[in-house]
Image 1 (cartoon, helix red, strand yellow):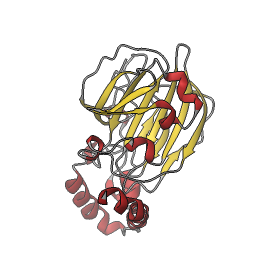
Image 2 (image 1 turned 90 degrees about the vertical axis):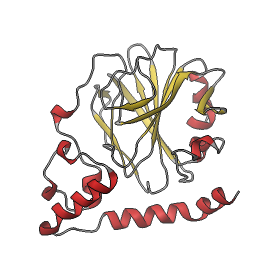
Image 3 (image 1 turned 180 degrees about the vertical axis):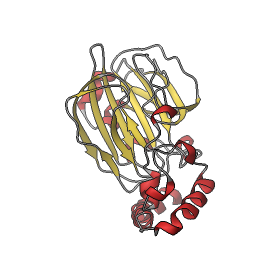
Image 4 (image 1 turned 120 degrees about the vertical axis):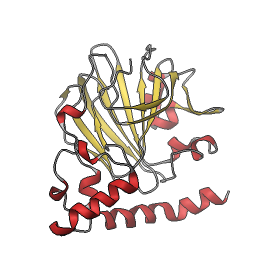
Length: 249
């Protein structure tokens, strides 16, 4: 197929170029106009930004901005959304199979890169897509202990529609970081899936104990989080927009 061949050859270069451009220093007197234009282009609500626009020296610094504490409330649910975004799919994992899109599945082993995926064969999952307008910091979805993380190298194919509805195993082909978190009642695998223009995924230095809403990672441009839970849960959400801290289960 032309699409996969093109992106296999050029997607990483495109992402690297965009990342470099996004880190070009913006003089203070130009920041407000440049970042207001960027916000208008992408749909970012700059009123929620942690700091004034003049405090962000590059587009990348603004893109990976934090939010004002009062702009998001962390719900008391066992599992909350780790990101702003759009819920694409969620449900129960059947014989290690998750749903990428209608009619397309993929396995936990392929996603998680080995036998650890078997732990989730009768668990639950949810996929949340981040567009350029969303906050790109990833927060802890529950209280617990972070036991480690793993980077799996791969491609940087787009992860939005219509691509997720056409290409089998898209999430399992892309570069991704996996953060393992163990709560008192369940184990989570939080998969940060890279995509076109996402030249960098960051997992922050962490102490073992973490709490809902703690900042644990960052995307540089839009992508997807797939959250796997090692047991069946009852989701309290529906497909569509969701914010950091909203109840999932």
